[in-house]
Image: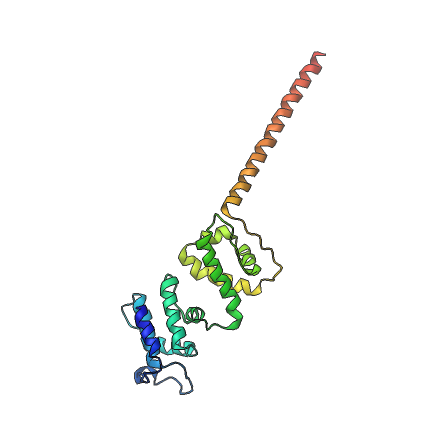
Length: 222
């Protein structure tokens, strides 16, 4: 599959034929990568996702219009990355733009932050504290409920919902926001410390009560 995509990218400008049935309704002003190469790459994507039916004409048209500014090399690289890294996530043109390095400049920082989150989940997990290059990443994770909660998300929820919330929140997050994140060990130590402290307080109360009883007995005896 990867080899086939690479071959298509290498011959990107050699094939100039397109399917009139698919493209006859696309405005003449819409220009982009070679349409035949585009169709073959999307066909490989569909095959890689295990889809039995080929993509429909309407979908091909809309995806081409959305992705037309990508080069064949960018789209091929995006498809390979998607199949290797994010195949458990529903594929959309926006994801391919991100993976191919063709996303809007305004989204670059938030996308880079999310990529760091995914890497830190694999590297550190919930038992270690993550390290991020941008303080807004940690602040965003804190706003979403904390590092432990993010690590506990299922892959489906992580890629579909947490990712969306992260990107939106990151864009509005001030650089001065609180960034401290606690890992699972730190949380358990804090909880254990609270229990031990509570036990110590209770012990002191009981000791004081015994001392008062002794004092009353002594006083009554006098």
